[in-house]
Length: 544
Image (cartoon, rainbow, N blue to C red; front, side, top):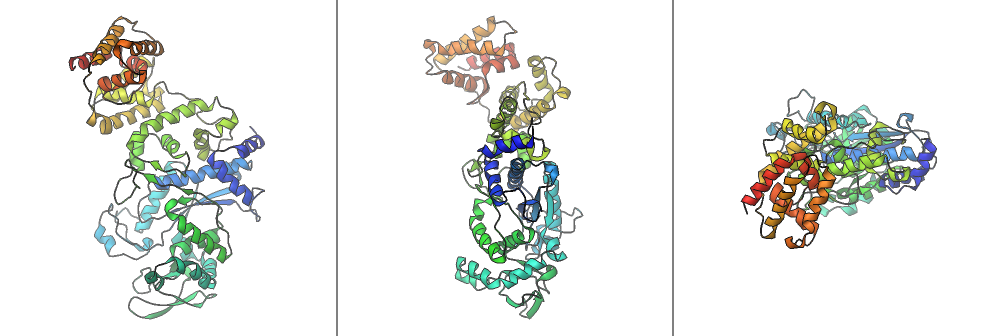
């Protein structure tokens, strides 16, 4: 497929990454900056804690927009028309000691110091707490194959790379204060300054009033913690900027064209956008995304621990399923808890199977197209894995694991799968092997502990006996779809009193599988085996 054909289709697509990318096309109609430099995308990270699922979603979504923009302008990733910077704000002062780190007393003695000067509590051989967390961030992003450039605030400040921008901040100091002071409480106004000097005695990042002495020389005057009046340069890493000023300065210094951020930073985005214009720059394009919620619909908080970590998701589902779950409308809040994983896994595979059958305009709305392009760089002719199908669904595997119990093993699961998928072996089906392992883990941790098969009641008993009689007489090699049709017929019989087939299948799920929802029963019975299913029926009827 030529880049022109893809670009034409992309310009008409309503998928959100293309809608975002078109903002950049309005900014640069030729698909290039006036000076010919790459269009710059940025994501930000605060290394006061370990990278988490929020970090993943921001880098993923930004990458999706980046690749969508390349499609719009007919470029390939290797053309170098775009860049993605993962910026670490590691000059920030340590505000509090995190709850989830060892040797917390070690960190307590370094409150207020830049994170790159705080010792590493993990004793992992890193130069500082920030260096440790930055290493974790890079390993985290590399794990998912993201194409990015890591940039450290400390390196930029101390090397002098930000010096020109810092001088510009001092030149515009009063204009910046005019923007910021009206947004602050009276008490905060008294100590607010655009520049945060680093104390020459304690090494802490100070929140103190600052007087600009000489903007061109980078000189300021402030009162140190011990009461000493200090005149000091802000260049070369001897100061950093307040958060909103720092964000604007970064946009100005790096020439950032696109950055998205969470709803909780809406006000910061407005003020930083005004400040970057004062500096002589331009606010990046971007979107404001909604935050994740827990199972109760409450905002996820690291201190509460009510979220879901990357490691937890990848224990029970694939990386692709996580990307698929995150993909839809970023402006809509999403609940993030273990209960959403099984559906996300199956939805991903359904979309992946559908991709090869879709015309290009529909492919561009399929999340799998975007996820495959995110880091693989395929040209849009056919996404890697397009048309792939798994012989069983994740829901079906979960139900199989459920009836086998908490101690179910991979070997047991494959013994059933080999009957359902002739000749199937783990080494021949790596994707299915991963899914089996995820299903076993999910069953062990979430299904088996609360599994309860209720006893059938009233006419339900007769309906289950009818199903048992059906299984006693069918051909052992009956196809799953044919068996499903005959199970339908039982549920339609008026003597059993089911208002709908949904009610009939709910009875099967609750009495045989211990779940309110379940798979297509024809497929489950063929996978689990007719004799085994009749034993489940016998147990259910015995409990009536």
